Length: 114
Image (cartoon, rainbow, N blue to C red):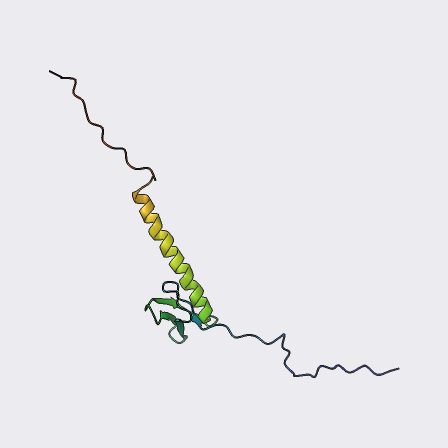
């Protein structure tokens, strides 16, 4: 019987397909739209993450666990900002339930004319 053909791939050599690309840690601000101005600091010991924009000083704080990454905090911030915007639009719509203007008061005519 013949021998097995050796593989051209050496064991232990990292494959380029398997290499994980690192996740972003600096993000675009939702309010001032500056690129890479938002940074996330995660304090795993305290269980708190803080997101801060260096330009407009917008802040967000959230609870974290051992699996949380900075991109998770950024996505939570986006969701919270969308929810706050929808909530504020909902309060405005309650005040004016219709898009039509309120009817003008009609002048009253008395039947007692002299």
